[in-house]
Image (cartoon, rainbow, N blue to C red; front, side, top):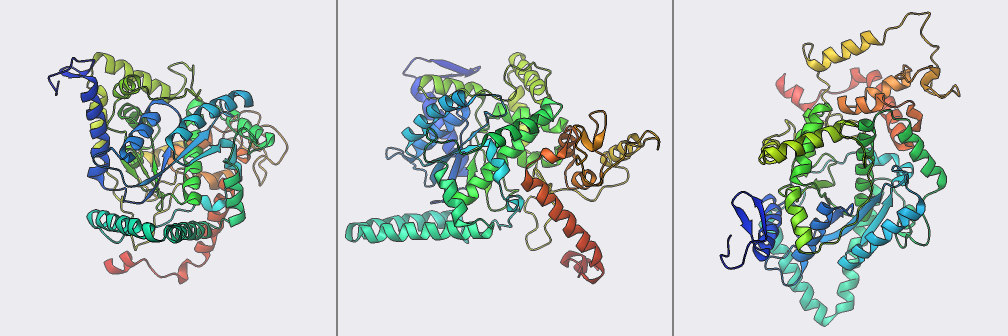
Length: 507
């Protein structure tokens, strides 16, 4: 033990015994050190905490609360907000059950004193097409380094305090006006009207008064996920839609960072799962501390240094409130999906070999993307329609991906007399199966092929498990159609386009 005074109350690893006070100091220091050494969150920045109500996200909320308290020796200097996404429609929960869970979560959110936003999964059918547009954002967008930003923030605070003593009402009015101007500029950038933003503000005032979605949207969500054949594809699609809702909420509310409660154990499982799902090219941003694929909004994972054991001990010793919410894979068997199988494998291996999680996690720290900075000033790489990760369009002839595509094309060849009659638009013949097929096969229509061409390898596997693509939210289908038309126009005028700067320099 560190203090050598109190008796130990827990042992995290062999030789790491802690008393209650030492363990709290250790836990708090690890959170502050993670934010301090990365220096990605600048003073005064708006940060959105994504809370599910589980142990990890609840512990993250507790750390932010303590970091912003007056007694903290090194106070956090950002402005937090809370967002919770209700996924009860996917899990088959009734409105009464969802209401009870949300009331418990509201009690926790209100006790924190932070502004909170509750979003429902049904709202994906209301998202605008512009949501899938990635915004270019230079790493030096602040125009100064971290130290200069801290000094400027402290100087501004001192000036605000002095001005507040003289004219408090005027200072408050100026701050509010500046914040509103920034939010309106962000809304205009993505083509969102102020009236639509007002409706979104009304949707989060009180859950108990009115549900902000229709029964038709709930049925649409159920029909969408019931059309997917495997639990693995369901979990992948749910994660994609969840990220879209988080990104949309952050943009319309003026947040520039999103904090996710991913622990070390969860990231170790995610690393192996993503490799199995063919997401090896995006491992660095899927498991790293920061994820900048969206440009204007960055996802950070400050809990990635904590194991699930440490989080469980902290919540138990210091009575951190959390709410259990059934997930899509609750009560599922270990072999129900790749996610469940990988999690079971890692946990069982961790029981016999305690360094398993840390070894896998440390491996993820060494990963990096070849174009992590996105080569600002040059042409932006094409991105996947769903996960928005950069796609590698330069497929080598001897690559594994090329071999997979050739094998897939050969397996799709059918005899002329056995091939079904394909309509121009998928699913418009009124039959249950895609393109009127008698079996739950992959769609062979031209529109489906165009959609697959806009996806990365992993998202292609998810879409191929769907019976019909018409059940996808409209903003996804509209963006796919827009990209298709843009590619056609580009093909028509390619002879008149100037070569990229990089190619000109090489020539």
